[in-house]
Figure 1 (cartoon, rainbow, N blue to C red):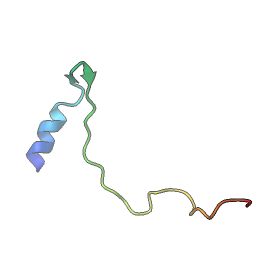
Figure 2 (spheres, rainbow, N blue to C red):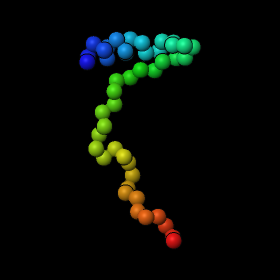
Figure 3 (cartoon, rainbow, N blue to C red):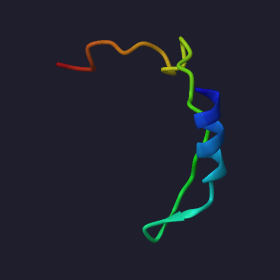
Figure 4 (cartoon, rainbow, N blue to C red):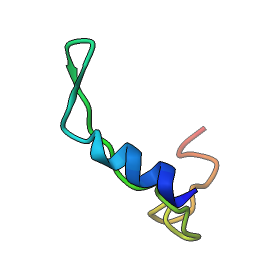
Length: 45
């Protein structure tokens, strides 16, 4: 929920067990973002 997201974002750039945290909003999948032309069966056989 929204409050959990806000609490998590407050921890961005903080340190946990000696490591720097990088927290961002959840990414939403977008159709067509797989990129590039479709792949065939390959080249020479």
